[in-house]
Picture (cartoon, rainbow, N blue to C red):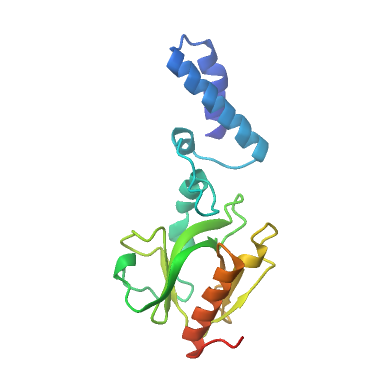
Length: 204
């Protein structure tokens, strides 16, 4: 598909009698293809039609990355222990101890660089939920915190956010890894989740 789009825009349309607006659009698309080639990032045709700027309020992958990676959510977000909780809207969660946007590492994080996904996460009672946004009517995934441990981990990334990472793990279960906006926020998540797991505040 990538090669077909590239050939169509750069070669086929080149010989066509295009309107001024179409020529300008073709020029924009050619530049995008050139940029993508340079960065070696996989893309979908949807990206070419989406001209919105990514959300600058939070360091997250471009919208195009979310579009492509979200296709794999169904497989990636399946519960590791086989337990499935009932769907619940983000706004309907009860007894929320901690909530906010995090970047969640994909289960299969080798897939073409789509390593981190922006997720709205919440700890409700003893369950960790994650959604595409705080307006979602159903969670993308969740897991009961019982039996897990949580810790900071600065080996998950090599960029400026390496000190903002933490992971939640348990023997013979999937490891969940997250990045917060700041190291302080990551510490707050660790403390709150540890409180739920241990039933007492984390020692400092």
